[in-house]
Length: 238
Image (cartoon, rainbow, N blue to C red; front, side, top):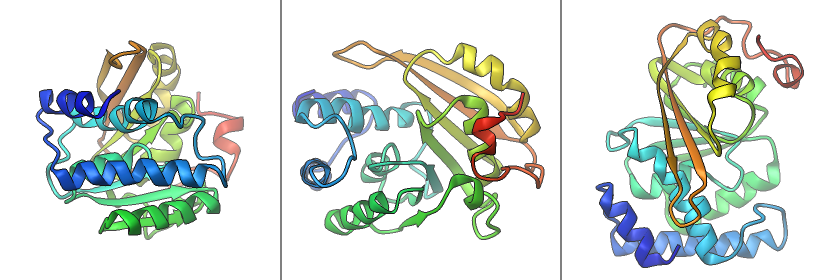
């Protein structure tokens, strides 16, 4: 995806980027490639690919959810900052917290935020399971995002405890999530959620399938969830 195409496609969705924001994306790309030589952040390093498969793909969440309000967002297992930091660049009023289990990635993200001049961003080195039991963060966020981290039944247990009642959990999936959603139905309900909508579309240029699932948090998550680290993945709620 060329830069002009990136701008054009976002403008079609009502997202206009200033020269300063475009400069932030350019710097993001440079730092991602530079640090990727020292640590494994992404297998995608070609500029057009990064703009399409990381930057644009992350921002697609904003096509279906309103990020223009000053809300708090938590991104679980963000890796190199996706999807939360591209969304943050587009909507600077957002307050973003990223939790990731690998300290090296947190070091990269802290450096990245400083270089891009991002404010109201917090980075936490922790497992999602223990982070979700931390009273400082549990049920404190308006929105929680996760991009292709795990199966929906597992992902829901990691993310739903962080969403405040009345908030939303946004799961971003690469392919059609219908089978995953069927398997996760019980978990989502048990954790206090209800699926509001599943949006399916194709990523431009390569025409690969994408799904964005928006789940509303209707009631508090039972205190036992999330369970101990590793348990959600080994024995998902069924």
